[in-house]
Amino acid sequence: VDYARAMDACHTLNLGLDAAFADAPFILTPTCSGQVPREGALGGMVNGKPSPAWVSFTAAINMTRNPAGTVCAGRTREG
Image 1 (cartoon, helix red, strand yellow):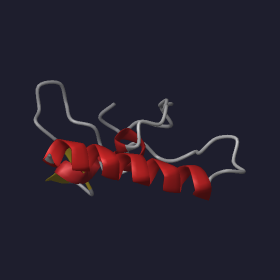
Image 2: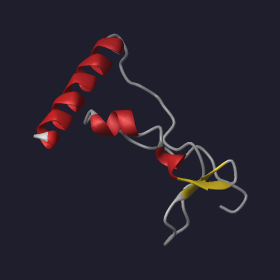
Image 3: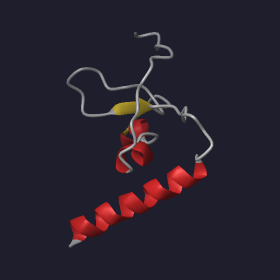
Image 4: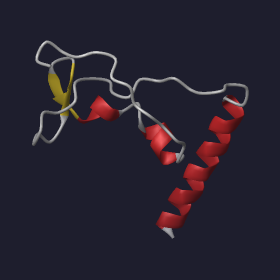
């Protein structure tokens, strides 16, 4: 029952996104709010501190099952 409600909520959110961006040919948003984790690390960094919020920008698109792509727009000094 909880799973079905969650899926219904995601569908409702998708309808809202469709309505909000009906005239937009595509949506351009950041993917990460911070530095991605190093290989083997458990989480990324935001403002130099470990944080699970480094992927906070992707939730709305992921939950509504919209297609998405990622383009690298820069690197940190560490690469």
